[in-house]
Length: 82
Image (cartoon, rainbow, N blue to C red; front, top):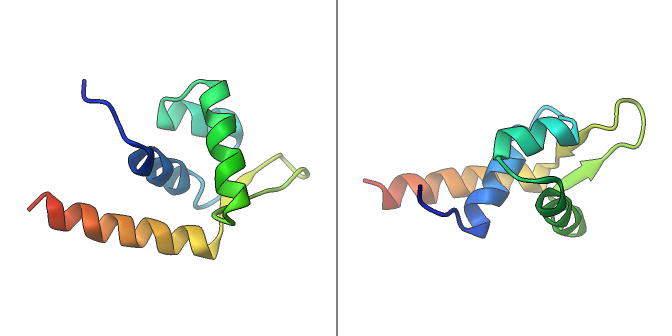
C-alpha cells in the first residue's frame, strides 16, 4: 500500500466533511487514528478549511474555502493521472 501525502489526506478529510460529519466518521473514512485526525483538524480549522460545530451533533463541515481547495485538488489530480 502506497503512503498518502498531506495533500491527499487533507483532500480526503475535506471530501468526507462536505455535508457535515462527526469526527469518528471522518477517522474511519480517511483511515486515520484519532491523534493524527485531531492534528489535521486543528490545522484545517486554523486555515478556515473546516468549521467545528460544538452543538448540535458535534459536526465538522467543510467551508467554502475548503470546497474550493477540494475542487482544485480534483482538477490537479486528474491532470497528473492522465
